[in-house]
Length: 575
Image 1 (cartoon, rainbow, N blue to C red):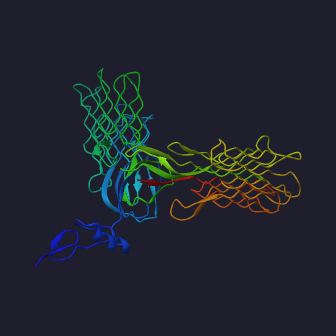
Image 2 (cartoon, one colour):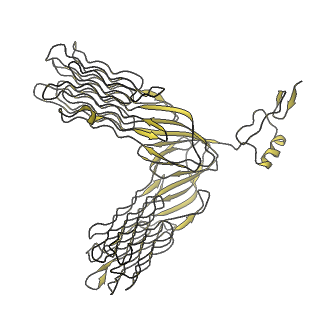
Image 3 (cartoon, helix red, strand yellow):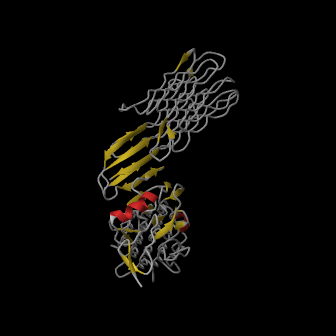
């Protein structure tokens, strides 16, 4: 006997309702009891994040699996009738398990360098791997070279294999190396030279096609193998095309065309340089041809890319700990945001603390659904290792919101290096002989409303410990140094946008001379100054807080300043 159950289902058993699934057609009155019990599935939205460089992805709350695209860097092309570089490995899949709240390192492989030295091994031109969790796409193989000793190199193995140069036994390199299923790439093509002086290099392999062999009638480098299209980003984009091989004689020999998906073209008998693979496609670089008197250089492969696509609850926060691209989901109208810049580096030798990166937060910033936004996360500034102001942190940016990097801390007895740098928050100043102090860095530079940060503190040239000023923080100025103490870093500001209360953008502590009490870093990731009575360097600001680096301290030698902490961007989407 069958029954009609809630959800409009007619079968022998009632439908199962979980927090992720409820099949059928339901009345609101039927749904409400499940919602009250917290067992009704939450609505979800599609989120796409694109990584053009190595960084970190934090799996949002409620996300348990992702779709991925991982493309490695393409191989560089060879020189002197060079083989085309093989495309970077191309790997894609769905239903890959992740753990919410976990940080995953994203590695985006660089393209291999094109050959400017015909006598180097083709392996020097291999592209670098791209990695997400357990998924590794292998860099493309380098294209072969003809050495000055007339050694005809084969193409290198890789995600896709590099093309061989002219002359036996210079075959193309093997693709799908190491082996994956599905295959991550194809073999490179062989060079051709039945009898000199007519030569042509083979094309590099692509994700979906082998590299073409070089030909003689007419003399043309082999074509790069074609790449593979992906729609993970919302539109169809082709990646991982192989580089074209180079041509030699008889003139006018031509280089092979690059494969679709960013493969660079080879050059011909004019002796021109080949064409590079397109950045963030994993395309192989073109191989160089040669004339009797001129030899071009092989071209570099294109860098790789990593794209993640997943379903997330609308209320979940999207955390960016490194620069990436983000596509505003369907239905998105605005975001609440936190944008924190990189902290400034601390100063050397009784150094001032680095200023915190600018702290900006707000609600209801308009976005356009389907638009691709670049999210820039600023790196922290380097601590000073010379008698100069520590380096400023780098800006973090989302849409029209820019938070400015923190100012570096001043270094002792330096002119003008004892001054603190201006920035999101200002760096602390150090003592400047004879008997004067540097100028503390100004925060909230350039000016924003509300203020993005605070001023640094001043140092003192008073014995016995000559304390330096602390770096400014998001919510408080850095403390001034005294004759016995370094200034503490200014406190940062707490935010709950990620779901819990986290404090960001604390200033770095100021250092001292031969004892005394060193400054502590401000709440929000500010680094402590170097330990009292030693030559210890200042502590680094905490990563992804925008904290300023601590100033170095001095006993018998100068301690270096600590590096500023990197910034962070967090978005919460409104629908």
